[in-house]
Length: 467
Image (cartoon, rainbow, N blue to C red; front, side, top):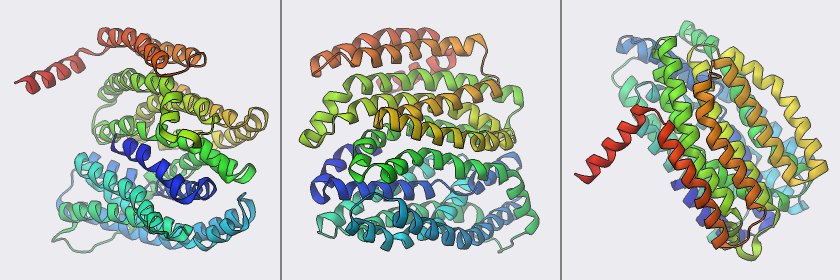
């Protein structure tokens, strides 16, 4: 929620301070930083799995963490060089912008390389702390990092330092702050008072488990950011803004289901297969039903909210783009749970192969639908990909039973009705009426179908608040 509010407040300010074209170029930079911000080469998930499934003594656990840190340092050197070259090639040959912005982007290429070690060490540190189920610590560090990554560049822009190197450098500082916070917690819980002992055997064990996770860690974020890179390379920096503004808001809403998946992973890794499957089915129903309310609300209110937010700077295409994209994030949220269950069971090979096979198909959809329909086609390609992900993962994880799917039909129908009806309404009153008309039946259905354990938890929470 903090991330959503920050985006709502900062995007109009960015456009006002640096202009649409420069903000479009900055968004491409943010997309690349965000990509490298997700690529920890599988070490984070691997160390969480290793520490959660085995409760060794402190010295052994410290050795696992040290081994992961040493491995991260080695990868950072090679990865930094590769990232620097890739950034130079993209901004020098493919980025569609005026020459001044292109030169600035090329000069900022070294910042993307600097991001690699920060993210690798953040991934290892977060994975270790998550294994202790100290999710509050990780969430706090993540929120602080995300806030600073958005607010520091805005502060720099307000000081009239609008060169992309200054703006992107300020964003990297935000990520560094997150690393310091999470690494401090990791040090206190695992390394304080322990000898520096890195084991090649431990490192090999981490990479053996994490090798296919590494594929997912590289290919997954690549698919997430490729839509905006295609727009930046094939259309213009201004078109990136029209697409990225609704995408950025929609992506912030996915933090809730993403956090649930993060909490689930160490628990699924330590349970029996039967217990994990039962917990996974309950979790996917709760996520699907609760997240649907937010999705329906944003679909119905997309037009009025964006108009109020951006005023004359609003690109009319952004409304339909946002409505299509938010549906993709709903199906993606459903996919989080079976994806987490499959990886927690040790079968990371399946998810890695799935993403490798999916990448060329998705790129073909991006170009095909983008050329025929425009920006809305690129948004549709994103939603089709996440839906395909969801279907494949549901089948693989065993979530295709009638009870689980039946509880998700209602939210899916409500979202579909909202999307169709939203194309025929205009203004706040009709948008609010539509949102209410769809959400009330969904609320009743949710209360009827939600698992009893979840109902008791909600009632207990309200009872405690009333007392």
